[in-house]
Amino acid sequence: MATTGKADVKARGVGEITRVAGPVITAAGLSPRMYDVVLVGAEQLMGEVIKITGDKTTIQVYEETSGVRPGEPVVDTGRPLTVELGPGLLGNIYDGIQRPLPVLQATMGDFILRGVQAPGLSRDKLWDFKPSVKEGDLVKPGQVLGTVPEAKNVEHRVLVPPRVSGKVARVRSGKMKVDDVAVELDGGAKLMLKHDWPVRRPRPVKDRLMPTVPLITGQRVMDFLFPIAKGGTAAIPGGFGTGKTVSEQQLSKWCDAQVVIYIGCGERGNEMTEVLTTFPKLEDPYTGAPLMDRMALIANTSNMPVAAREASVYTGMTLAEYYRDMGYNVALMADSTSRWAEAMRELSSRLEEMPGEEGFPAHLSARLSEFYERAGRVTTLNDREGSVSVVGAVSPSGGDFSEPVTQGTLRIVKVFWALDTALRARRHFPAINWLTSYSLYVQTLEEYFRTKVNEDWPKLRQWTQRTLQEEAELEEIVRLVGADALPPEQQLTLEVARMIREIFLQQNAYHPVDTFCPPERQFKLISSIKRYADLGGKAVALDVPLKEVAGLKSRELLTRVKYEEKFDAELEKALALMEDEFKKLEVR
Image (cartoon, rainbow, N blue to C red; front, top):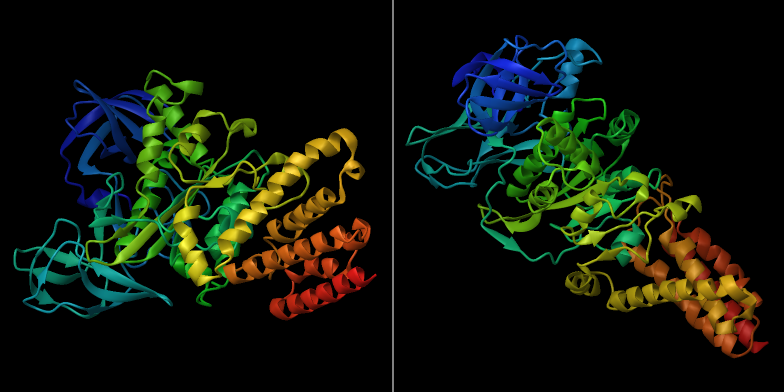
């Protein structure tokens, strides 16, 4: 669970409730520190200290507070909100304060009772620990003590907690539980397979690295036009129904991170249900193992207590940093940060703080910065390389990108995938607007794509963006005078841009082949469209009617080739037919 259980709490003090205002409770008689976890009322509901004024302590409670009244006791645990880190996190589903939902469901059914606590990691499961240190070795913070096979393709590296070091006095190996002592140090420290960490405190690293390696998503519009780097930050803002959740789920399924943490923060229950029912059935395209083997889900739906929603993003980020410290590339999906900001707004109003724009707290931008800045590609304390890439969905009211959460996010993130309601209305998905979106990682990632995919990747990307920009400019003229008034060269530009949109940028998330498109295939597909544009330009220059250029059978084949399992063979057929058809047009 997110903090020490009731049975082993060493209370620093006991006070009593003086005021109740929804999830915000005021208590007297305590002397806590900021962000200490407290147990509130007769049912010992979990809460967190968020304000101290004289002898009055203000607490946000992570559970429903109906029935709680003044005079009931409040117990200070003396610890901040903490999560358990160790084997067993992957494949699990937690609420915002790391209570395992499958465990709670097994004991009390589909509705969680108040005051119920369960450890974040199972105390019954045995893990096969293989030590990598021996007696007499000096160990330092972040060093790997040994390994545990957590999933088919994820080796769990048991780490020395930060700020712990010493000489190994005793080592155990073989089957053990997460709370069994695996290594004892000469100073008396006993290191288990698990350790705890406060969620609001970033885990330390040795060095931060430049983001020069892309996070491959398999989504053409993202990888080709607006790439994100490993250790990078991205935002997906969009109005209702534009596809934020589907985009986040696509990234979770197909990105080439070794570990994925998915935070459903304030989302509708049916969307989280879709994640929980579909992900376990999916196969990881990189390893062939079940996709859930490399995932941990934080489910905090819109009907759950608002205070736990505020904590859920920190819980997810701490899990991500833990796997980063093992040397893995981790992708964190936060869906959505707007619901998180709304939780902060509600708590701020109950604290009677001075509101900022649209009622959000004045510290909104600072909180967003704290969250996104925990992303990055780093050298860990054990000299491995790891990364946390963060993609946050933003749900602006009415699709208004000028509202505070979107604007605060844009000042921080380096990639902006802007979802467009007009594209959604045209059934163009993913509905990422190629004119308003951007990526600040393009230049730093060019070298990678040039060497790993094709030398012409940057040139093709520039040509694609230029063609789409020209189309936008020509559409203004078309609205006034019609397409027939344009010269043939510009009419061809419109046709080629249409091909880019319909063949390349559109992608079917629910098609078994088109749902994932590796960079090599992306390059071949856009190259074939560029080849069509070049041959079409020559044909138009020879006065071949545009109607004949646009009506070629090879163009029709190109529209279907992305759905073919034998992509390379079908693309070769289409290109061969294209060359043949253009030769016949030029001869005529």
